[in-house]
Length: 95
Image: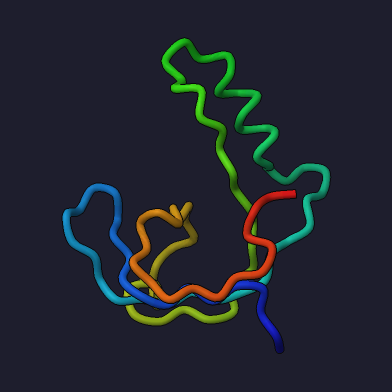
């Protein structure tokens, strides 16, 4: 089955100084009613006086492959800037 993204490389959890090898691949989900979206998050952040003003760009996905540090990881919010990777991704940005 083809995938929309395949992130393979070293991922650094924000609270750590060094990363560990891992790979996640899968397919983006279409935004539907009841699912959180970038619009929802940015709307909520806009009401917070401490928000930096930088918009959040997020996508929900079904993971079809998990290797390395992601093998037993709970579903999470993964920040693309924490990857040092070779990346194959189609349509990464939220629509």
